[in-house]
Image (tube, rainbow, N blue to C red; front, side):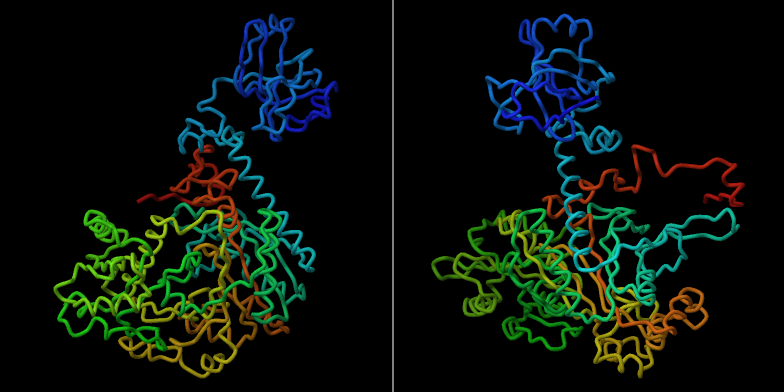
Length: 608
């Protein structure tokens, strides 16, 4: 028996027990004729006392960091207790020990405040995983996994595996492809999601399906992306949107309770896509803080039912606003005391290439009731006061205004909102706020091809009252300059995203389940009958055999874990992640293959 107990298990109630422990040496501390050693495993850390009688053996067989050690001894109460660890009231008086394996000096210290940089730790990830900070992340990941599985099992969902070697049907991100040796010149693709398989399972009668499943997308990476990632993938039959929202609100609330011990009892707020874009500048707003956009000039785009405040800025011959497609303001609480240097720094911030604006206008709402602005020579104090009132600005607040093209200005204002919230301490890491965003446009306009593309994916159904609009109208865009007048421009998707603290953590839709409507959707995306059959003939064929109404949702499992763990990067919650170039630096993958493998696959490599 290598061990009778783990290194995190023993307490005062175990005093005088004879025990056997095994683990890794964390530290060695010699004090004259005695030596203290901390031994560590996955469960914790325990102090070992080597008395004078064993010191000669230690001198003959010196221990170093990360040696694998087995000890036998007696549990005793510590004289110098350590309240920072669970086993801090006891120690093991060692009677015998055995070095199970030696270790070379690690390339970095195996502790929370390690001296290893990201690249070094990723190269030796098997050592990085020994650190307590990383272990806690993986424990949280496992807790989320277990909580989700328990909830879904209790609600009659069935875990069904789907294939990883499938047909390539790229509609968004690029596929990873795998050559087939037995079918020369042909390729499998790795699934971007199990979307069509879970719909086929609904056709097969498995009315509540789920997987915690790997998905693959060949796309440019960043902190919240990996080429292989994990989803909590779910589908239900005979449901409407309300059934889906209620079911998966319950799932997230269960995870909050099980993993964070948070009772999220409030109803999750709901917001239309148009309201999200109008009030927050993006479709995944962080609603933990109450800063909304003030639209001073409405562009002629999708905001058909919105009223702007153009009268507040018109009539003063300020060309920056007059010539802009849109003008948007935000009010920052308590920031009117910003100095000229600070407002200049904000101006430089919005001019950065990542933001791309030409400048910034500010209005200070002073605590004495006066107003100070960078455009004083154009706008009277009464005009400034009217803008401040419309922005719900209070004495002491700072109004920031951006102007330019619609898409860039709205995104820049959204980014500025988040930046200022961080500077003002309005985004609290221990606060969680969920939101449903609903009623997305079904289509986006691809100007370069003069055609429609699916905002979500081509299996998303229109809202029930707009199905006839889609069926009865030709999707071809005959007047590209006036594409917004096309009936398809106003069709809303029966789709929904769940947002947590400004991050999309899940998304889904009610699916198309009638063959005629699915063919119409494919046609709208520019697929002729032949292409439809080549790419999706299996699905269209299945719809002829009694497909039920169905819908589902997929949560970004890695991202959810990162948010609950207080991290900006999903890599911190994946055991063996890739770097920002998509490389596994530990395995040195991807790598070349030998000529024999190319010959077997009947592939010739031609690098240009």
